[in-house]
Image 1 (tube, protein in one colour):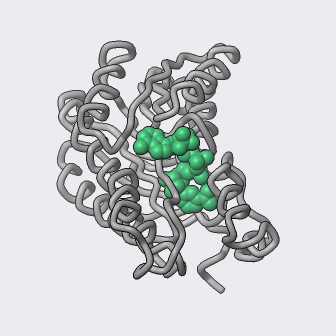
Image 2 (cartoon, rainbow, N blue to C red):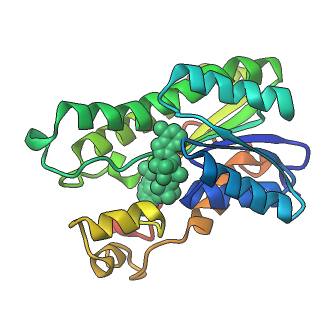
Length: 251
Ligand code: NAP
């Protein structure tokens, strides 16, 4: 098992890639703090893990709130010990619309959850990881942080910010044996993409054609990358954006 005896905190773990990663990390021996703003979905993920014999605790937190982010780390400490792995995965797609049409509230909310939320998770977990002798931080960025997606200005800006935060975190905390990497997924089959497909964005077929394989990725394909980054298999990797986009950005 690749994460035996480790404590892993995963945000946005009530759905999509976060849930798949929580299930996989638990199967690999981690005790998982399943964090989501939707308590019921966090509980459901934790229940699935426990049913399979794993260790999990559901915790409700809004990652954009400093108090909540501090409390989720405290819950990890109190129940399973300091986090060895922090997976800042929670994110929202926000409202669609060209940038001049975006409301200030919509812009601010996407930045608050997708960028500030990642920073807050790191801010509150890092002191404990330092005291614990190291750890692995994984942030969910996106291909949207690298290429322009029309109608998603705030989302693209937030994800580019996550890539930058990842680099700075890696540079600042490498001396403490803490690795910081991010994952840049392409289109993945989760409720987020389903919502985009039904809200006037790209159709399912158009989304699938973004990949050279003509399909969207599965949450488990991202979870396996997250497991690589969480485990010692990636012991020399830090500060890097790991693209897993089915070839979208090579075409
Ligand atoms: P998802 O199925 O919508 O899962 C995201 C989870 O995060 C949901 O359970 C959501 O709860 C939760 N969440 C939202 N706001 C939160 C907050 N403020 N605090 C804590 N939890 C919050 O989406 P997903 O596709 O798995 O997305 C996971 C990550 O991948 C996101 O960062 C997303 O931007 C990124 N991503 C997705 C794709 C893709 O194609 N799916 C591609 C690139 C990057 P609610 O459902 O209650 O809002």
